[in-house]
Length: 247
Image 1 (cartoon, helix red, strand yellow):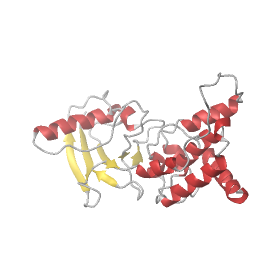
Image 2: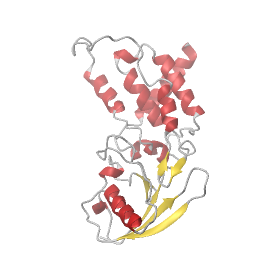
Image 3: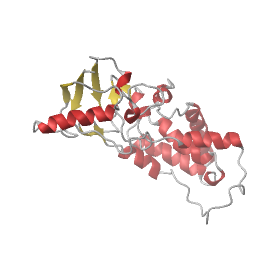
């Protein structure tokens, strides 16, 4: 397979960037999108040119570091799939593929396709933890939790913090990310002790980090590679209002 790539190149946060065109040939349909970028970088470096900077780590859809806009869609648009799990067979031979970093004020470009997601870390630092003393690991059945609640908590906890929700939102809102982090703790007994303080602090940290407002279009949930549902935001809004008016 042969492709024409239009890749965003930007030296640093303050410099101007632009799309740079590259051709890749004889691409196996069975390799991943990141492996294709690896091959392109090997070719560029063999010519004495700088390789394209992009984030990656586990390449198993777990770490959330490989977020890219591919043809205007986070992670390439395949449902429940991260970039590292996206294979070249998803494209047609001779396609033109546009590759860009996440576009959000709260995610400044570090270089090329790499963005800083320190703003997510600030939201987590504001309350994404349980600080109560739990001692050693309790017996699994000593804290009965309804299966429905446990399933909802687990679904929220699958968020990998990739930022696709922010990149897909026209306002660059981080509501789905924040909601997932708040709800997976709130739905479990250990997380209820400091819940009111947590939800208030995390929402305020989200706003202070420069993320936009949610306008209820649910594009975030559609773009989420882990399928985190929009009702997390509904629950976050309810719990935030309760925390504001009862504390």
